Image (cartoon, rainbow, N blue to C red; front, side, top):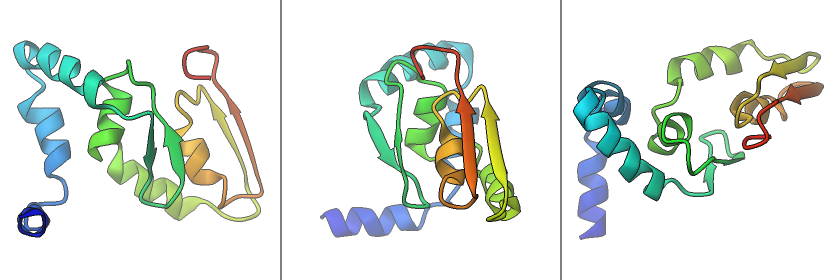
Amino acid sequence: MPSLLKGAISLLPRDLPQFVYTKVLSPRPLRSATNAILRRMIPGRIALPTGETLCLNQSDAVVSGALFLGAYENAMTKVFLDRLRPEMTFVDIGANLGYYTVLAQKKVARVIAFEPSEENA
């Protein structure tokens, strides 16, 4: 049965999680319930599509929830990765969870990240 489920999921559009998260579950009555459920599902860490591991904030249903669902800034991530060059220094001011910092760390010469929130730093 798991292989049948995986096969069925592979037929779904790749942007389905983003559509469900940003459109279907965004109206106010559903948002609170969705966020409460997400907070219980968010793991402590996820593997990014590029292979790096990112620590999530399990009390943050918005950014960490979107990352967990694979619905976080997918188009921007592609543009970001395409523009990085090995000789660059990447500075991430207000790094939040460090998503872009983690993505950049193996692609540029130097990464400097600052996050003032103790919860995410």
